[in-house]
Length: 193
Image 1 (cartoon, rainbow, N blue to C red):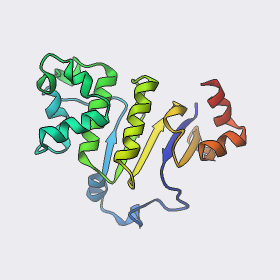
Image 2: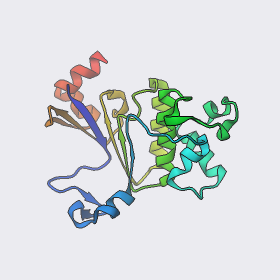
Image 3: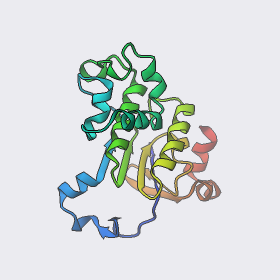
Image 4: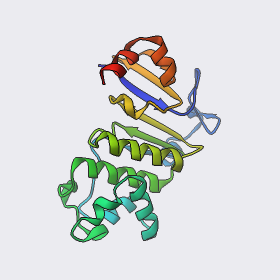
């Protein structure tokens, strides 16, 4: 079925980053400017702190903890046997799916990239946790672009622009209020969800 992309800028014709067309960038520069959090986050057999600091290995402990707070993970880590020094095991098997996603979000926030792409990265957390994380992201990422790909409409309700795709084709675009007024697919799904 359709899925949604929420972002904070409206573009026509050309996608730009810092005012320049993406075609003008070298691939390595685009990668450096982007932090991506996939639905199935990859974790290494290392400590929680080391997994968060993967984006910036020289990060101080207080920076790591601040990113964990933004990802609504700090309290969960406090309940682990060794806190931030708990080894997560191969592929993070000692953590729940939602905790693994939040470690990956904290890692991406620590990278402090100009573009953050959350690719269904909140699917394993409940809606209350999602709401807290999105609120933290709005504050922490003010002035930078965040793209959220999701099937859960609540994740994009506050986005500046929502793009509804069905089978790879754009079927609706607008803000939450504009899409509700259209009374199309988005409005029907909003009422259903």
